[in-house]
Length: 219
Image (cartoon, rainbow, N blue to C red):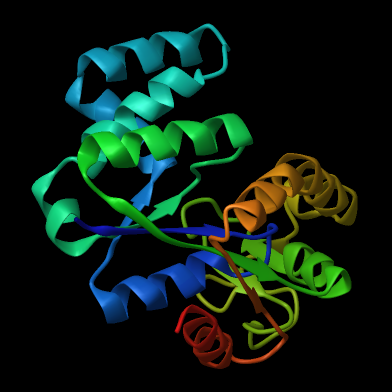
């Protein structure tokens, strides 16, 4: 029986960075539903063909399709022996119910659901601080708070101008956080009621410090 972890948290809270540190230390496998979709399409599997057709039609991927992919992945030998961190699933209470069934079917257990919380102003600052090189052939990415270029507004690699993408604007950041609030609040209540929710705080410090707080919360 493998341990399955779920990390919840708003955009910009650092789930990706903290998840990478967690998997590197524990050996758990990072399972992203987005990557599963891409893998299935690349394999031209039955699910992959179905997903590609839905995307071509501009339709949403159903919960049943996502659940089928997650079930297949969690039943594989590497997950069975090492456990995993689920990224992108569940997103709703209906998917949380599905995950319970998947874990029963695959013989795994939900070890913890970790909620990573953070100050809202800090999140907006993080979400709006990314800058990218305007030269698409270069594609370098910077952060005006934590990873600044040597010369303001200029790419270190190729000397091209740095720009802010439209999806990194403050209005977009606020909307993304609103969507998170609407979608995730029921999940927080769901896992609080089941006694499986663990909370930790992401602060404006080095990622390793936030990771230590995460480990303490899970201990």
